[in-house]
Image (cartoon, rainbow, N blue to C red; front, side):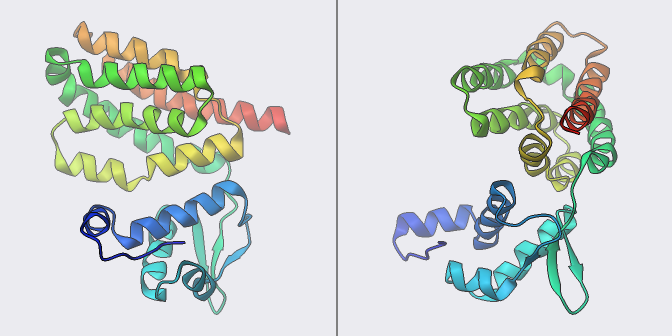
Length: 225
């Protein structure tokens, strides 16, 4: 449950993590765990009661998930989970690949001077993979890409990239489409080396890496099917 507390520590935490974001995390966790299946309704009033909050922040969180195309609003019926599949990735990931291509080109000089942020994420992903910690794999895989976009030092680019909900879609791809992140982890090392060595093809390398996620998801879907 989302608890509200008036202690200074909790107040600071809530300031960093707005209630809407906490509720969105709960809803996403519910999608990942299978609590809500594709086509199933998410009842705003019931969620608010379970979390002991008003319906307003729940409504805001649901709107964010609708923007990410994870749920859809049905007239007179409220929100329900979309039937997510590899076809959604086939639309989202080319957009992400294009953004990261631009990000790599802008970030290349800065990362060549200081490659440590990428090296930290590569090492953290390696440890997570060795430990079999899927949640940490997702986190550090996404954070690797986020460091590149941040290094581009372009607020519009960063905002647009974040609006794609990369972490959420990555988690859903792993959980629902059985995409294996560890199979892509070696790419991160190669991309890091390309930035360090000022390889002029690093942008295309990064773009191809992102697009390969779609191919991996399609293969996973076909294998299951």
